[in-house]
Length: 442
Ligand code: SAH
Ligand code: SF4
Ligand code: F3S
View 1 (cartoon, helix red, strand yellow):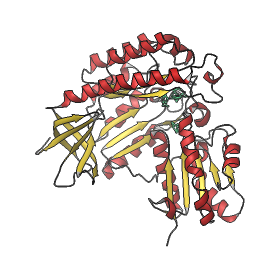
View 2 (tube, rainbow, N blue to C red; view 1 turned 120 degrees about the vertical axis):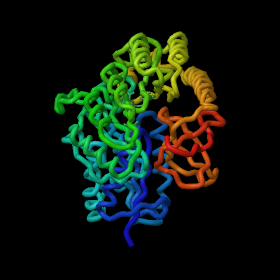
View 3 (spheres, rainbow, N blue to C red; view 1 turned 90 degrees about the vertical axis):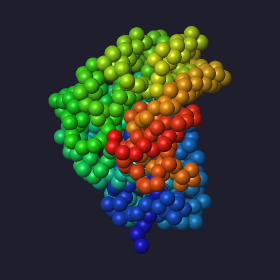
View 4 (cartoon, protein in one colour; view 1 turned 60 degrees about the vertical axis):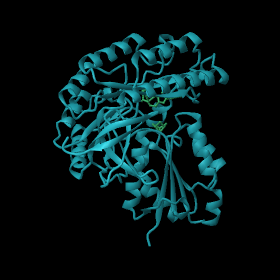
């Protein structure tokens, strides 16, 4: 019987996809997956350190394995991802959890197979964290578990150093994959039947700006959108300092590209944006939204917002509220600023007290929720196209998303996972839609 693996993932889509690569490596060396953590012979934690609570979450779950490890001394516990790549973190992890067997970083993910072999040959723990990014390693055997959706990296790392953000320190400098590798990967995925492809990068608009590929993001998007087949195309994350009309022109030309742009604004106040080192203003952001909606009136925008950044005044916060109302986002991810050791913002004076942060996040969440609810209600009575992604056995409902990321639930006699279907929306509940399956051709 072959040995079993279980992977625990934290953090962004990038990490979710990296866990698929980790699964690919584990399968290559003969492991099989198990959904039950206690049945696993190797448990891999793919960590995130974007905010303190992401780290605490991982700490809690790793700590909880102490007992299992005692019962199963041959169990291998491996910790990778952004947290291990943080300065000084491996020492802390070693002290807190002496039972961890392997630690690896985001910059040497591909070595995991060798590290496991090394660990099996020795008693000592194996710690291998690369300091600097190397050549891009092309993965051909990621084990994807998200059919009909597939994620495709177009680039790695980040050069932006937003003053609050740890990503550039734990992911290294920006590197873009060769366009032909990306195009070939997408072609293969479409051929395999994947129906939604999401191109991933921390700032997709700066694709190729390291000068190595000779291709801009707009050109790459055009090439990918020109691939034949019945699929949807998404990309994220766009950065307002670089988002431009070239990209929107390509969207206009290709109906395959979802009319949804994830454009994190972070704050509606110019003073805060400057302190965040975002390198755009509120006005530039609003101009981009206008440009997008002029060319593509049906387009929607989602965003990320941080409240309680050092120095944020009540007026600054209110400008964020005003901007949220003005743009009318399809949805927004809202965060309380979390101090990250080693970033510029961590050194700033006038950190905001927790009560004020909490008060602002509650008000903002309330506002965002009310806007999303209103948006959902406008769906009732309309017919929308949904890509069916899954079946919820408890509710006996199929579910999927429209091109704007709205979740739609419906009944169906036959399995339609992986198919585009039309739903007549009968009811909206918060952010979820409920509808009746329409028969016939689309
Ligand atoms: N590259 C993307 C975002 C990556 S991180 C971009 O530039 O938009 C995802 C989101 O986490 C960010 O958009 C930001 O809103 C949030 N975030 C990052 N660092 C944070 C911190 N220190 N505290 C709170 N939220 C943070
Ligand atoms: Fe972080 Fe800014 Fe890079 Fe996004 S662009 S990953 S927020 S430093
Ligand atoms: Fe993603 Fe978290 Fe790393 S958001 S890039 S997994 S720090």
